[in-house]
Image (cartoon, rainbow, N blue to C red; front, top):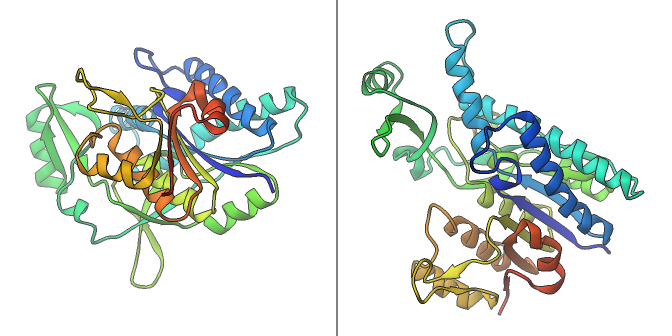
Length: 314
């Protein structure tokens, strides 16, 4: 049986620092990314792809604000769904073209994915995730009074809306995703951490204004499809302890108990490597064969030769 790999793509796979984020730039980045994914598929692995959407949803929120005097702006959950379609399309086309060039007859399909969060999650009581454009203090206070939104002053650059970042609990469309994978399709799912939804008293779903960490959602996806490997691709080849100090050391192949010790000691910062390591730990704790954190360029080397931070059970 071919191994199932869930690949979580970082933001640099789609939009690189310093770029404007044009369609042409993003397509070029995605094409480079899908060449790496195609290498895994050529080797016989079943690959499920998930991805970030930070720059893209930020752009959509700016567009919403700019056009709000002409058309009604959409809520954050709907904007997130738009990025799933946008990025999914680019991955579908680019990866499909790579596979065709290699003589591989596989269809790539994206699933607009809802991810369940707990309406009582503590994150909703203390929103901290900035989203959207910057405004002056007057606009921020007006939104806080009129709409009950949470806003913060962001490092002297202006005021930004903040929303909750709750923990993902499950994927609404998981049975469809598993069926597609089983049937041999290459699936893109849970983009941007998924569209956050809560379960109502009558068991229906409602979208909420929140942002789910993409790596945590990727771990839930990997766990629910029973993937063998969770691979988190970022802009560095290794996680490191004592980061930014003379004692900095790359973490290579490491047992679960040891990486948990480093995590508890605070080596991995909450705003960068922390969620990646936490997601990798959870995946292996819950029965995954291994989790890999490495750079996009090292994806296949990380999978087959351990180039990167590779977390295994004790």
